[in-house]
Image (cartoon, rainbow, N blue to C red; front, side):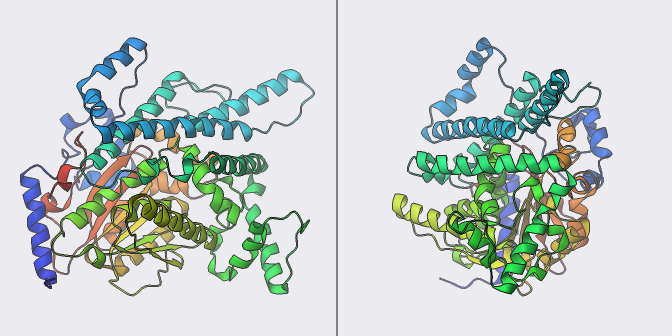
Length: 547
């Protein structure tokens, strides 16, 4: 109840961070330029990758991703199950239950991914059965490569009809298991709460709910396959749809084929659209080949199931990696700042699913969700409503709801220095390079001195050199018009440091990465890397959370 000055908070936070460093509670990684810490080929690929340039040249600490080995034989599986690490997990209820939940989730969504990929296959009729068979095999191979996150590797012969090998699938699951190992350890050490949707009382275990989601996604998958086959015409299909909707708004008439068969979503699409001038040209595309891009109720309703299928059920775990920095920020201020006095802004919140996990861990934090799509904001509010009711029903906990605001990320409608934390997930690879600079500048403007930005997005070239061939295929496989420039030519660390931020942390999370930046107080020196730049490479996870 005693008011603490900003200077006192600042001094105490720095002292706590230094203390944690000295006791080994806050982990760091070897300097990247040390040849004995990295394979020479790795260093060479890293050195020549534009997105890694600033981290390499400034010798910032960085995370290094090593997938877990996946057994090839039954005897190897037996050895793994008898290992001390696995036995420790099996004897701990929390960790054992986590792995049962996570493994089941991945199995379900991997099979869903396979089903959706096969549903998207479209082959033109051909009177020549040999040619038809060849074309069909090529489409099957392309579908399976998308499922296995596979692509053409340097020095390895590949063809359009080549099916991904078992080794590629093993590597995919090895990376997934490493992600789960880290996520599980973060939960175990109290960095954030265990996934609330692991409860059997959650709606995702309701067969009627799962069936409805699957049916909606199945229809969407077929439409996606047609759109992908149309090529460039399918990329901008949403513009014709929006023109019809806008005309309906202006005339007051909604044109439908059969008013007795159209569902309420069609009418919702018209009424939520709003002023078309709000949506920039780069936004009006069928991203991921999905129906209506970001601008329909159907798109918002199918997004979570579709993306979790794409990533074999690990999207939540990848995104939760960003909570490491949020948890550190809160923990270092415990006893000095009330949780309810910390303000967090989530830019481009999408369907708001990640925000439900955030509120589960920090229920009293003041948070704001923004997105440009009114349809996704509506879905975010519905997801949050379900979560709040679920939490109260199952645990008795009271969750303070966030507020919502429609806006562009490059034009944030809040005053300077309004927030302690700004988070942003999977936005930067969806926007042009100049907009990335504008968004970073806006983040700096609305952030308080001493606050942090937690940016979670796709991995980039050089983050995991053995996966560079996978990232190179995203642009064409999923119609990501700005992904190539993001993946190959965007140095995010340089962008944020050019706006005034100090680099704080680099993390890898399977096919994602997390970068954390700090807005220093005026007059602060960011040269003290020992107190500012950290990473969580240690196999136990980010144990700094034990404050």
